[in-house]
Amino acid sequence: MIDIRWDAELDCTGLLCPLPVYRTSQAIARLEAGQVLRIECTDPGSLADFPAFARQRGHALLAAQDQGGRQVFLIRKEAA
Amino acid sequence: MGVTTALPGRTNARRRRTGSPLGPDPERRRYGGVRELIAGLRNPTPLVRLNRVAGGVDAYLKLEWMNPFGSIKDRTAHYLLEGLRRRGELDGRELVEATSGNTGIALAALAALEGIPLTVTIPSGVPQEKLVLLRMLGATVMATPDDLCPVDNPRDGAIALARAIADSPAHRGRYAMPNQYASPDNVRAHYETTGPEIWEQTEGRVRTFVAGYGTCGTITGVGRFLKERDPGIRVVAVEPQRGHRLPGLKNLEEAKAPAILDRSVIDDVVRVDDEPAYAMARRLFREEALIVGPSTGAIAHAIAGLEPEGAGLVVGISPDSGHQYASFYASLVEQEGAVP
Image (cartoon, rainbow over all chains, first blue to last red; front, side):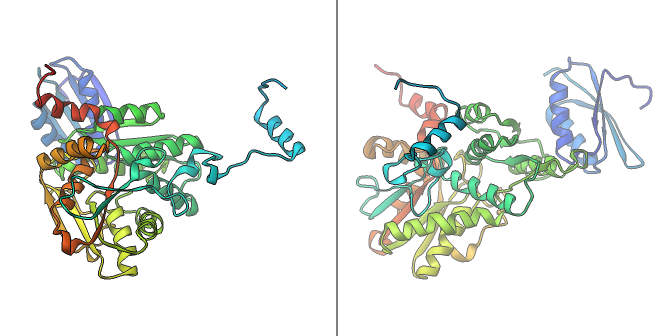
């Protein structure tokens, strides 16, 4: 996970679900296809939400990690 | 003396000196501010008889769109804000609320009067006119896609988003959420105003009351008031089908039943499909000259299906007008074909 480079970051710490997914959706809209977004969250619900979100929107969830109460996700925007 | 442009304070000072203030006078329909136009027992919304479309049923629609911000939600928004203020939950906070449009518009108008910032989360499919009105009134609008809450119920994404904004630790209690789906103030608005108005306006002769499932504030508040007056009054709830396109109404199988819903005051639930509701909306426009929103079509369709003898005097709610559904109705008009 450390080896993957990202193009933009989104701090969703202290935000409850579904705000992280909402913010991510907006942030991804601003990226080019192929770019990677790193999202940091503190709501454990995100561990279920982000895989579902990526699947539904057709983006690639490159990594999902839970590190001591902080969840980090890397999502690559795929071409529409 | 010619026209002067005095500052408000100076104008008031002159009025005091001359002793002839032009204060509010509701009898002359002169008001000190738009808020005074919100319906109540002394200023009820009209009951208008359905003379052509009700199929022999003796029915009246209560035109809630005669409220100043355009819908039945003016009452709700007024009571929600008063409730927050009374409980000290409004002090210095911003507002956030989930709404399909009308509550947002009414809240935005009242918040604008008081200089309180408002964020509204809305589900997808809300007509463009409502979005524009919200923005014109200065609200921040967050459109909620149906797949926002992939794990929970997708149709309730807007509610979940508003809840998250209100409760997120990162926002440190900056937001107050009126929460029309759970607030007893929503029910109280209709128990104290809409219900008593219907009782007065029908001189106690209403036998059947018809309203839609939405936040359930109307059906619960009015139903409770009327049942207390006369337990024999029949309360009919109108419910759209799953996957419906009837803004403001809810199918309680696919959406969570609002906490304020009191099923004990409801005698019957009538399921209405989209197409007959739209067809009835069209008839209301063309045969009764009532420019109503689609939910009124659903309610009037349910009324026309009642058995006239058993129903007695019927009052149905017309929650909003058709003016804010031009883009929504455009597809109905297009189906009828081009102008020759």
